[in-house]
Image (cartoon, rainbow, N blue to C red):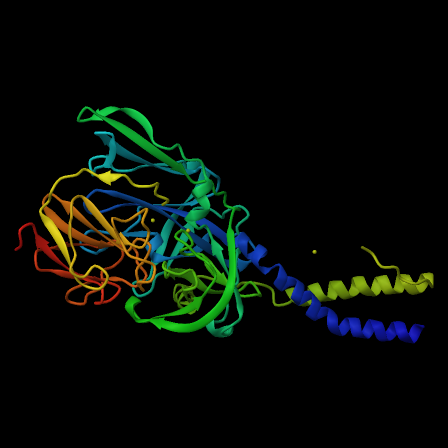
Length: 457
């Protein structure tokens, strides 16, 4: 009996470390969620307009302890001016409590229809007493990441461990994407369109207010596998992890972790025409910058896991000793640009601008451009709607806007890009003036339009 018990104890000692590590991996996503925060960024652009958006970030520093240093995407804390240049956000906060941020869209009623106008921009309401202010400590010029420093450690938010490199995992291995996708806030309180008075040219004005309902602990976790490691040439030869864990707007800046809870990448890009193509930039870029700036990370005791295993062994040994002492037999005992509501149409009027399909799905067709015309796959959000089978077209791909008699083209964050006739790819939210005779393409030259005017050039 004693010999059998001794053999059992030896086997248990040999297998327990692996069991402890496996249990730790099973808890990794829940533990890593404690290191993720939601970011609010507000930017006054060069033309005086205000842009507000939300994203995600994760802490670095002494692993498992509160921190004030967070990693996010560059595009979370910047916004594009009409000339394509970037302006750094002047107000950056970490959102702690629900309903700490809301946006109100205003529209004019005319002949029974609601229309937006640039004279009535969105109203952003933030409650700073439910947030912690941040400063942007570093923005990468080459890659889409930034480093934030909060004015104080964030209660309950801890530093995560960064993997030695993105490729410490292999193709086919399980990963988890963590963050605050904006779609998760679609269930938050929305007022619907409400009358607010006749204060614009004596016309009735209606408002639509949407409040974010996320608390700092309401982190969304999705899972998938690594599809491949690749390079995105269009984004400056950045190395990325392609994976199929679902991400949406608002996930930007959140961590991609492996089964052990270590961060291997930053969720940055998504092919909006399919949920299986998502991309995280390598964590290697962040580690290199943290080293250059002498910002500590991955600070931890190397004896931590050994102490855990030793404690478990002591507990098991004590239990076995107790069983032997009683000379009895053991009995079994019972483990992510800000949500926008449905947009009304713009104030009608003939601008005389026309776009002519040169190639692709709209080849040979001609359309007037008045106010704002959006192109994409979603019939609820676009005026020119592509069918699902046309590859490379995003849910909302790009938009044409007429402002003071001039026509502007803007990419709205498409996955495969909007291109000018010269082959130049527009940066997200970069507005470029187009003139009669200019061409632009969606995703590739297979979907090309030319600018014309009423009656021809």
